Image (cartoon, rainbow, N blue to C red; front, side, top):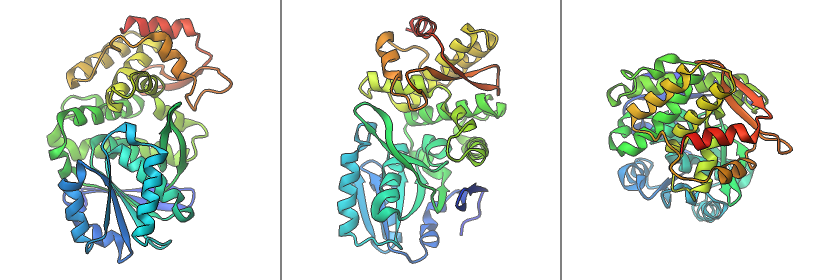
Length: 347
């Protein structure tokens, strides 16, 4: 096994698993599969980059590909997976390897959680966003026309294998999208993630380790989203609405970035924090190349889209906001007029 830059143990309600962060670890996938029948699920972009080599390393196992993009994170895509898993002869002792970004991890993870009432899952994230966020925490699922992640399950992986080397093939836009989640973790818990010196490709392994640790700490304390884990949705209520109203023309990470800025401005507007919070968030987003404006999406439509947010109950608004840096708070019952005022200000 490759020397691990970092091994982060994760305790779960049913046991534990380890997040391995190491250059070249993807080439040691056979060690983790351990002779079981495996099926790799990836997308059309990642398959020629890493999927085919991984398939060959596993003795020619089945390689299932899906189209690249959030709009394919659907039940129809997962239904296609089920047929392929049957054809591959995957049984309950087998393992699904989710090789790709967040869409692949969520979709393949949901298939693993539900096929034969659950088979083993290995997460091998290839995007920065998936490394620091979606591959960690055991939540998998797909979108419905009415909103994001409305069908899903809790599914803990056997392990997460994070290979920082694959980030060298990541397009600049995907690096920026992943940075949005790392910035979120910085605002929630680790101020070093807000340091421009850390947020560079040559320090990717350290960036990933720090960002992953923030999420691991939260999900271990709240594995089923009963309380504190809601903090990880900072900026996401706005982001999911932006994605939905734009017909997913906005990438998730870009929407999260501007969603963080909306949350910071709303926090200041409600008197929770000083103006230095939205000011710094705006500066960090601009430095990173992430959007700082909503760009003409109708504020009323965004407000309406937020009503499908899983965190809202009986139509009562519920936002994760900031009392200051590393001081998240959940606020219920924020008036529509306050939210619309902030959205209008960021058009």
